[in-house]
Image 1 (tube, rainbow, N blue to C red):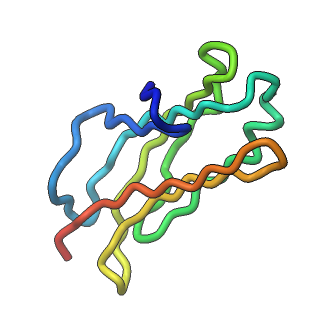
Image 2: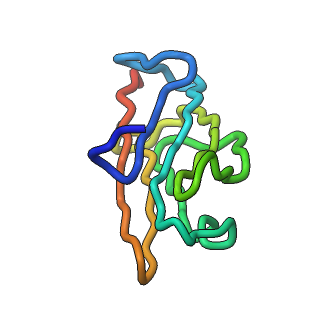
Image 3: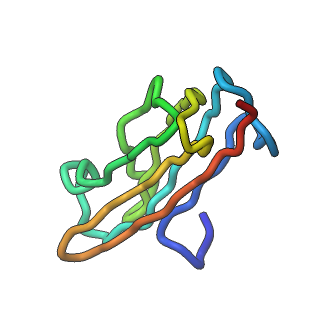
Length: 107
């Protein structure tokens, strides 16, 4: 996990420069949360999609105290803005995270 941020995204099967509609993307999302965060607290982390759909996702798993991760699979659907975006959003009284991952695709 990167030490400079609270959220880290890893591409599990490699990252492409340009995707096509229908391509699937597998990601590992890691979040550094306050150490007292429990699974119910992690459920306040939301994933918003634009031009993509989540086809599967694991539950949040605490890999060590205060570090959580989940795997997700996405499919490029496309939209009128021709920009696919995954937004990770977590806001509560102890932490605020908002991070976007953008995927360029051919229409």
